[in-house]
Amino acid sequence: MAERPKLSYVVREGDRPDEVSVLLAGFAQRQKHTSEGTRQIMAFSLPGDPLDFECLFLDEADFSVQMAVTGMIACVRTEAIKSLLHDRRELGQAIERTLLADASVAREWVVNVGRRDARRRVAHLLCELLVRAKAQHIETSVFELPFTQEQLADATGLTPIHINRVLRQLTTDGAIRRSGRMITVPDWECLREIADFDERFLHMKRAS
Image (cartoon, rainbow, N blue to C red; front, side):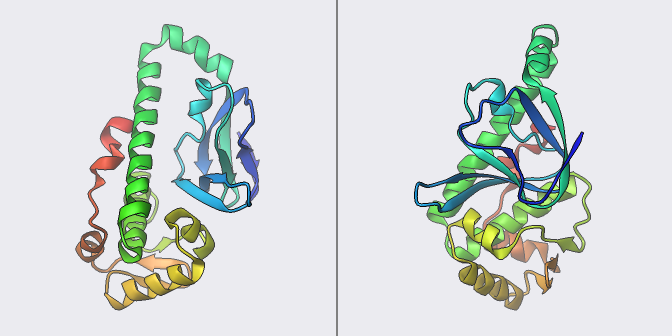
């Protein structure tokens, strides 16, 4: 186990890692940068999530993983896992299911950024975070949003100013209540309906 400070990188695009990691505590984000330096966040990681298991099968990382807050990760050498895959078929199946579930989430994020308006995008992302946090036994009755408005903007293709406006709108709608980064959801069905949210894309039962 190793502590990773806020904004530190677990893996960078172009790395050839000899180990993979699982997030034990804190939050992280998967992202890519353009040549102009702009960032697109493609996934948020919660405790219990593998961060870079694709590197078991790829020679080079085509994405970066950065800690959103200070947290803890567990690292395992790729060769150790690969040797186990020959003897432990169930381990390979678990890794396969995890990667397939991650791909499903990535597809949903493409739809979110490409086809939902700003209000639905942000509501959908909040729904996803709350459902995943609850599944990991993280307190959600009053949820401390671990990501800044800039990070939410880079995950939804919006600007931080637009994110602030949407959060205010969702508050006016009665879907959420805010106090700083603390969020409560007084009407889950309202938030879910605004987001057009269906959690099937998470494949949580299969991925677990």
